[in-house]
Image (tube, rainbow, N blue to C red; front, side):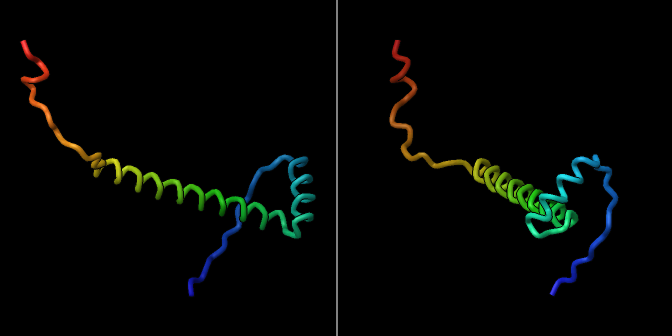
Length: 81
């Protein structure tokens, strides 16, 4: 079982934003701290997923695609003189 360590941080947020945030947090039955923590956690999760998808897409592009077919013509046929 992984033990998660928590750390407090100090934020500078406008008073009106804090007031409205407290109302929203109360409606969700959460503390402002928990609400901000959840939002930050979701942002980090989305960023991690994006980075993983980007690495996967770049690996596929680097490998290339087999579109089938092959060369059925000769250069001389295309440039008859």
